[in-house]
Length: 216
Image (cartoon, rainbow, N blue to C red; front, side):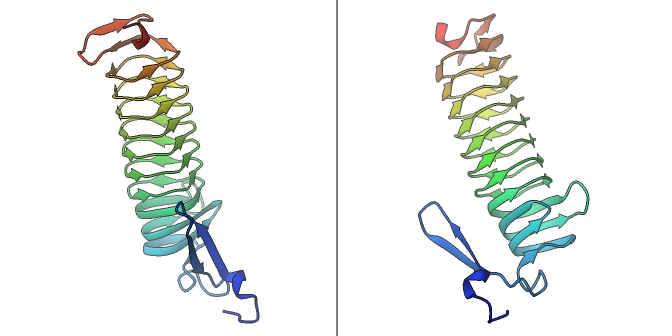
């Protein structure tokens, strides 16, 4: 490290939810391994540090992944994503603590919080956060805000649904503000507006053609 530089030029400060700050020192003059920066193509195993690659910038822990020159630019196999911006790639498994997901394919894993802007969700557990757009194929949604997108299947426990299309799955509780319900099981919650095409109540009685839960 060049000690002639201001010490704080080499400090990354991440403010987390409880107001505390997490400090990490980065030496830009050393290699990516010595400085804990993944900024070159190749495979990384059990890596803890910072990813800086083609628009993806994140703090990670015990992560195994591959950085590519072409798409998918990041292939994440496992580990902990602590925060930052995911631009594009394939997520195979692991834990997402916080950050912004711009686009890509999520195959499996645990999402704790953050902002999902677009992409394909194949399976996994969603604890909390904001879903802006994209395709949800299967998995468990515990809580959060759904702004728009396509829901194919899975289990919705609670949260706020603003708009989008629900094709199948089980709705346990929460607030539905608008959108299209094509089919599935509605067990409870609040229905405000929207288009109801076909579905079942908690006793598996069928309701068709605009007979939405607010009319039961």
